[in-house]
Amino acid sequence: MKKYILGIESSCDDTSAAVVENNKILANVIANQEVHRKYGGVVPELASRAHQQNIIPVVEAALKKAAIEKKQLSAIAFTRGPGLLGSLLVGTSFSKSFALSLGIPLIEVDHMQAHILAHFIQTDELNNNSPTFPFLCLTISGGHTQIVRVDTYQDMTLLGKTIDDAAGEAFDKAAKIMGLPYPGGPEIDKLAKVGDANRFTFPKPKMPELDYSFSGLKTSFLYFVRDELKKNPDFIQQNTNDLCASIQKVIIDTLMDKLVIAAKKTGIKEIAIAGGVSANSEMRNRLLEIGKKSGWQVYIPELQFTTDNAAMIAIAGYYKFLNNEFSDQRVVPYARSIG
Ligand code: KG4
Ligand code: ZN
Image 1: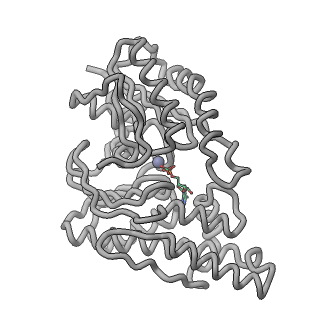
Image 2: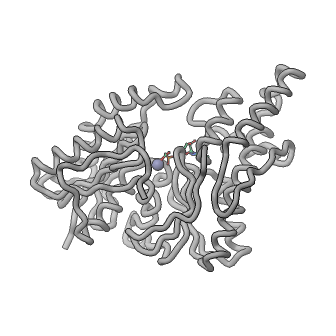
Image 3: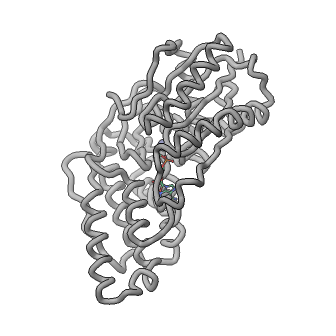
């Protein structure tokens, strides 16, 4: 029996709506909010307002693209958290009202779990290269950095996490120091391609077990650049590519070191990456390289499903639907991860 789930994502600065037919994606529409670019980061109040403006047109576009009437929908899945509260409230309120008016179930989805479940999105009948349980997922985004053991679609255990900045934040802050536009990750990725990653060295953050820390790295990058600028005011312009390649290298080295330890510790060789930073071309290459050496089966999401999107919310909602996991109308968003 075919189920049609509408997914709604509004946790940060992308308003997105998607429709899945069971686990197959029919539409995934994303409205990026350009308004934040000139501020060098997401401005929460502007994000909430933009979501409010975008949500109805984005949902209409997704239904149209999927060629689905709203009365055909089986359920509405939405991001409950973590994220910016004002942004989450827009998606949550819209989803509650829409589900109520259509008389269909409401399904809350955790944004970080959804990033992981993006690996189960089918784009056509032939594409079914999804990880098998149990697998490890390195989830790297603008707000989180986690190593998660995934035993089922719902049963996930956090093995390690960042105690301060996320990997995406490290990219974004380093980019800001160099005067590059927001979001900095994709900019650094692009500029690093022709840079020398061994030109400058930055100390790898040292953390026990499987945890991460990136705020010290940002500070040492800031001090290094500041000191060099005193000697040469054109230091950044003359060395942008090498700076990008070098900072990218230390971030990726740090991420991969812990992932290797986690794989050894758990004996799991099914390894996935997810979240915005998994779009990074060098990160993808390194995972393939280390995976080959270590005998891992690696899973790298399609680019369109790495950064925030509602397709991952819809797919996570589909698996909850199969499990009869529904939310009631009193559900409220959460800004920080629970559990
Ligand atoms: O998953 P995501 O879209 O949003 C959150 O849930 O946070 O991740 C956004 C983060 C930003 O920090 C952005 O700079 C980073 O992902 N990012 C990248 C790349 N594309 C996006 N970082 C490095 N290389 C990229 N190509
Ligand atoms: Zn995200």
